[in-house]
Image (cartoon, rainbow, N blue to C red; front, side):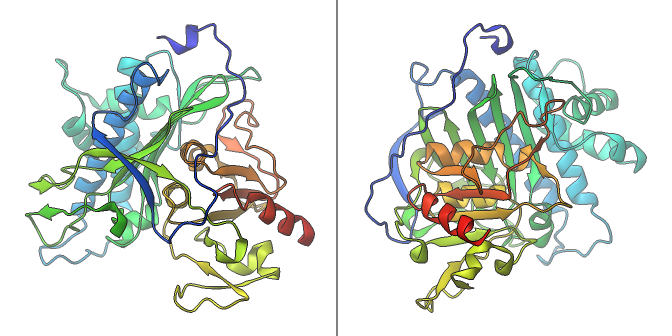
Length: 411
């Protein structure tokens, strides 16, 4: 199906709240299903083919990240101190080039909105390094990739690549690495590869890959990895969402290039069932403090889960980037992610698009601080920027209006 030639019109997506109304224990809630390439059938998922391609390329992109990150480790398993961001740069641009190349082969008429362009790679003599990591993960092709092929693929998603105008548009949205600080910090900090498809203005599918996601105890999985001690022994997570079909997750497999025994079945994800704000588990932006959030007028914050008082809320220490917070809410580990908009900081669409559909399809809700949906078409030229009024609020849905009322009362 050529999406750009489809005559069908897509109305505003309506998301059902699928979670029970009763509170949930402080753990991820999953419904296990049998193993398959995707958790949806062709009949149920209108964009099954597009989602298959997205899952495949995001998983390969995560392997780029893991391979490049291994270069940060010394033979003793310590992080090697570097004076620049070369490793994350190579991974960032490598992921964007790979995703652009692979998607353009299958869906050549669908453009890409992504974070990077090739100017930095060219000016810092990193072209050969980027081409090397992309060549290793690209699908087989009779013609070897050239430097020009990879640079063109990067620029396909870059600024000024295409002008969309005011009409509803169809395009991919990619964040090659959300949480670059987490990429450089080591095994404990999260980072995410995020890809979404927007059709006629509506987000219809999304895929997030988080290579160093820690398994929750409720996941009932064990990992037996034989390899270097410098690499974390965990398989990460791949989360997918399709409009009307729910949010699902499975473990990322064989990221380390070693023998790993992991379950490959999909599990259904739901937001948590918290129904009162004081019992919610919160995430905020890494660059902001709790005091900058309007709810600080009602509650102080603590990161001590065992010592939350009546006038405190639990603030989860999650690093880095926005998409890992969406992943936390969609998987039921967090109840709320709240982000304050600041005049001096631009909010980019790739930091939110895939997270929005994953949370929606898990039963949650995403709006600005005035309760309006995030308008992906607000940037009428390039679809790269969003302008949420005052900030972004991501919740389990149940306590969304309660928090909006608190924000309104302090404005």
